[in-house]
Image 1 (cartoon, rainbow, N blue to C red):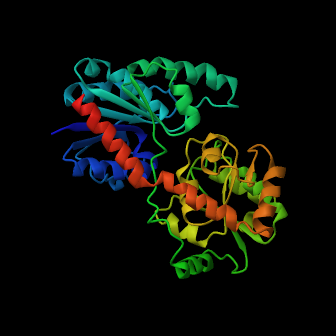
Image 2 (cartoon, rainbow, N blue to C red):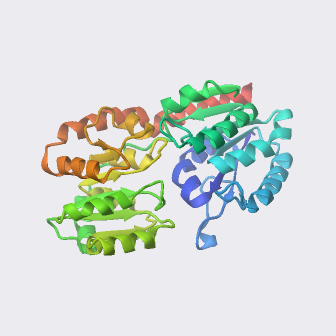
Length: 370
């Protein structure tokens, strides 16, 4: 029986969001599965990972310079050295850095190390410090990587210049296009009522962690010019209270709803009229793919991920410009965007979960037989 270890910084906001279908696939292939990540649930008992035979709670910290990451390295190395894994597949910058260092001895014994880069921190237009720190680190760590997977074509072209044994492009983690359908609209109507949003209001939706990179403050700043619009933000993160204060200070607090983490986000897609992704940086954003699949008008900031998904869209804007966001929202609210929605839906077929699962299955089998 083949054995695989999945590693990421956190469980709730990464493993559970992106990798359960892959664990399921591996179990169906007859593999033994393990996960090493930090239990980031408020109620630790809620951390139950489907299709996972063994879970290791590792004290990863997102800041690579935090002391707990030394402890995380020692714990993970012990697990890897004893585990005799055929494949170790790591994700997230810190999780992947520590894993590739901890797996050096195991690689000498035949373990294959995979790393999926969900968006390099160095990219066109990235701050110079990102290139100095992250580019150097990734270039060095590529030598300790057997299969380097990128999810955008921009990252793929750059990764090919590194010294990983094999570089592969796979279009994201994929989404189940059969699941994200704009149906059950009565549920959406009821949700809108339950949230206290007027039936005639335009609902602007964003889904994602509430942090500086996701840049949701731009939407709150733009909301002043759209008195008939409400902004709903699904996600948790360190800036929630700051954004609540910003909304109150701008006089739009009564039209901003922050739901926290939701497991029923599909109902919010059903309720929304326009999806907004204002991120400073993205890899290949799953939330945007979900919104596209649901047939929403999508307004997004220009970056490698949104450029790849919303090819040639007239609704892309600069993440640093409230003025541009307002202009694009005006188009989305006042003009017919049905052709754009249709084009997005057709293009999204390339990112269906069935395709990405098939590609990953092939890679796993090839490396185990190598």
